[in-house]
Image 1 (cartoon, rainbow, N blue to C red):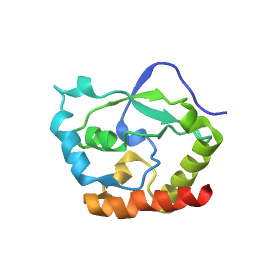
Image 2: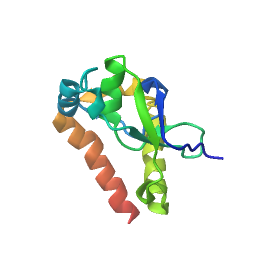
Image 3: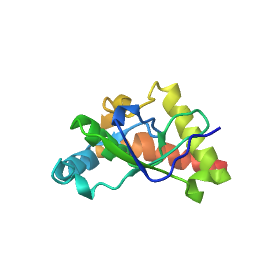
Image 4: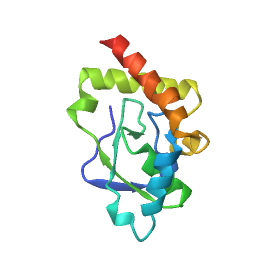
Length: 138
């Protein structure tokens, strides 16, 4: 049975699983400029979902999670029960990207720290791959 919860929980970012293979370096630097202990109140809880494996997997916020990990800060999370995630198309899409991550040995936020790429690489390696895969699903 999937793991769900109400409200907000605090976890170490490296305990969160991922649904994304790369992090955009430009975006990470931007997030790091404001995501400091003093600016932490501006960071909304990151959305997570259990896709049936008992793990809390990020459905968004991968860059913020990496920034929090690199700065040694805890991460607030909320359970994502949005229809975009939990509907049939969303579940199929997320399970596809999670499969790509597992195939590449990228399981947790800590694994993403070695996959920070330039913005142009991010466009090609991640966004274009997703566009191709999801347009083929339609």
